[in-house]
Image (cartoon, rainbow, N blue to C red; front, side, top):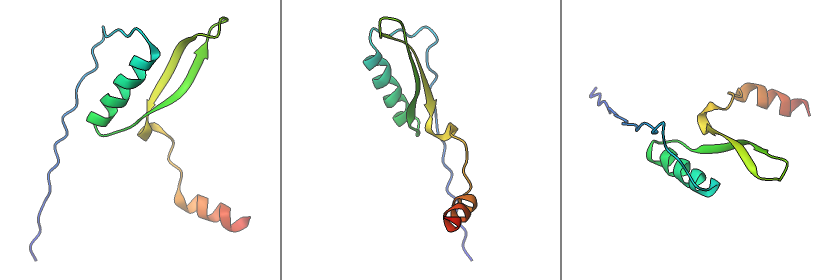
Length: 81
């Protein structure tokens, strides 16, 4: 039996600590591109607005950071309903 191995080397980049953006659109575009270049997606998780309705804080998370949901539990729950 001939066994072949595939070695995948993923090189990631660091996000500069002093990076600054002028708009939230720039933030969204930067992190969407960053995730795509590094093999994952970014989810816009939370957003807080100030009293004027302006966004003043936004939480972005990696798509893979979501909690794992067992397929067994989902199947069992669907059978009960």
